[in-house]
Length: 239
Ligand code: PGA
Image 1: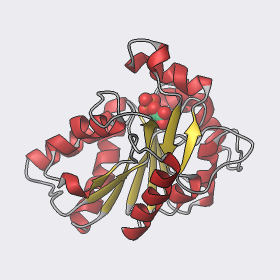
Image 2 (image 1 turned 45 degrees about the horizontal axis):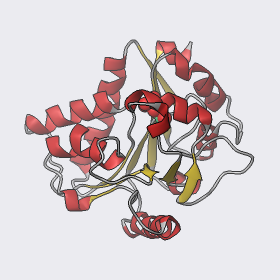
Image 3 (image 1 turned 60 degrees about the horizontal axis):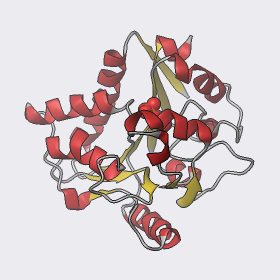
């Protein structure tokens, strides 16, 4: 794993956006693996600025997102589909028909997961996967557990994740308790991975990931199996 420690959230976002921008420029029909959460918001703003300035063209880019709550309608302002439209897709010239988020409104969630895995596969390789990291070390919604799933699956959310995400909802009771998420293997198939972390709350998870061992209690540690991972974090998340 390559480690880049930044002075601020701003710098972290700039570095991440620069890496993604380089790939979009070099391969205009690339596949981006995208994440939600507060961490990548700055990165998405920078990418939108570059698109606005005519420096980046997303017209042939495709994207796959890591996860989605279940059950949730795409119109719900807490859904990850809504988040992606608002924070990125509506601000760049990507064709929304080429953007994929697991279907949180599917009647059959297991089938929706199997279908999603096929969609990711059908795109060939994801050129760059952007990840955040949970305070508990999760990536996507792959929560700490005795065993981890290789492929896209339905998962229950841990108390730690429900508590961490409650800030986005009116009350903790409204936080969905399930999600559809790419598995660890789905994520690891990306050609390149960048994982972003800012703030002291992420310090323990970042430390466990950088420890270099594979530990199911820190799903992000499975990234040690990949040969091209860049950890971009601020000083608070690293020290
Ligand atoms: P956050 O979430 O960016 O909102 O901290 C990260 C994650 O849970 O993966």
